[in-house]
Amino acid sequence: MSERQAYRAHAGALVALGLPLVGSNLAQMAVHVTDTVMVGWYGVEELAAVVLGATTFFTLFLLGAGFAQAVMPLVATAIARGDETQVRRDTRMGLWLSLLYGAAIYPALFWSAPILVALGQRPELAALAENYLRIAGLGMVPALLVMSLKSFLSALERAGMVLWATVFGGVLNALCNWALIFGNWGMPELGVKGAAIASVASQSLTLLVMMVYATRHPALRHFLLFQRFWRPDWVAFAQIWRLGWPIGLTGLFETGLFSAAALMMGWIGTLELAAHGIALELAAISFMCHLGLSNAATVRAGRAYGARDMVGLGDGALVAMLLSGILAAMIIVLFLTVPAPLIALFLDQANPDAPAIIAIGTVLLATAALFQLADAAQVMALGFLRGVQDTRVPMYIASVSYWLIGMPVSYLFAFTFGLGAAGLWLGLVVGLTCASVFLMLRFWRGPWFSDRHADRRARTPV
Image (tube, rainbow, N blue to C red):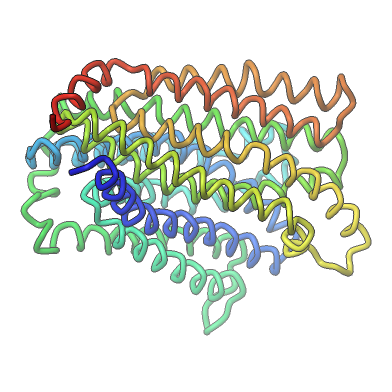
């Protein structure tokens, strides 16, 4: 196969796997938007409580999801080596750790009000958020188990099922919200508790669908995922633990950077905070696209790594970077050419503050366009590195780039240099750029490429 044919094959495989994963990420984000809109229709105080509760849930979920995400590269590598027994072992222990983490974290959700009050929230709002979390927290285990099965199916390049399961969960969540928040269709009006019940029902039934698919589909049932599920496999357990906790912390560091930026934006002004929230939603949508492609790159890198195909690993990474760059360029054009209509989608035009929010948001979206390439590069590099089972050093790189560089620079630009909201986002650009550079250097200079050039010479016909 010529190099051109190899690149085309890599591009085709990445697109075929990446598009359903992008769709799955966007569908999952649509669930969040649906929850926010429906509870917002019910009441302002209830909306504030659900936003607070959902943010707390997501933060803890993100930390535990590292174990589920570790399943993806390990299964991809085992498949490439033809070791189906290892596929079962790694997936099963990923499920174990997800279950254990979800159970261990539930008490913090059940008694969350004192914690939220200690973090500066009003007691009445914290109490309402606790009511939400006591029910929604029951969905932590099924949500993490769903993530583990998504990783398993994605590594087997069955991402279509991942997409449809996520869409199914989103539709079910919206229907349950409509019935239980407002008391429609003869159901009781439960408000915040109804939103929580809807989330748990959606997560649980999505888990059931994925379990049935993973155990009953003719091409998958031979993996016997749940046969003797209670038996521990401490070697695989340790491997999932070793890869998983740095992945969870890396995600937490990045999410924390943007949460801290929102806090500092509140110091600048209410209109700036509103514009920040809208611009961040738009940036998050674009990030979900890059993340889906990054997940596909993890699978492809894991398979090349498992087959000891270092040429394929490098070539696949180059193609993934090119596709991600094209996607980033399209988003940059969108953010720079039509920022006002995009921001207006989130606003009531009758609001007298709308023009000011749009003006501020336009500047922030222009800054978001600046970090598109850096954001795409850093998440792609993380995908490559997870594929070769390197997660601890990337965690250190992320922590330094986001918190020792990005956050102080944001503060300096925004407050010391007086650049306000734009300066705060410029600091995010700096942090993401540093992360992308250091992570890419880590991947391309890693020990896994030591024999790449010799392999390429051996494959080149004389």
